[in-house]
Image 1 (tube, one colour):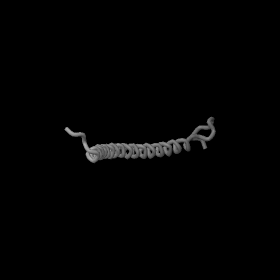
Image 2 (image 1 turned 30 degrees about the vertical axis):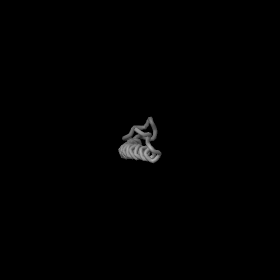
Image 3 (image 1 turned 180 degrees about the horizontal axis):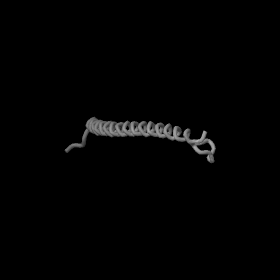
Image 4 (image 1 turned 60 degrees about the horizontal axis):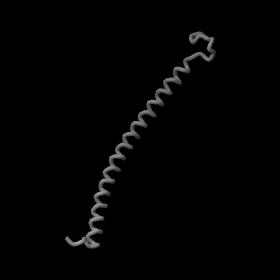
Length: 74
């Protein structure tokens, strides 16, 4: 079998690069899906944190200012 010509070598290399490019694109799409999912999770957690802080602030507002003072006393 004769040695492949320079054009054949280049064509083979281009084919391999195209296959690799498609693999990288698929991997990138999967990674982007993960980033999107993590972004949604982060946003949900931030929202839950803000709600918890609001509830804690409301509870703290009901505590007496003076630790020795009863909460129901005027």
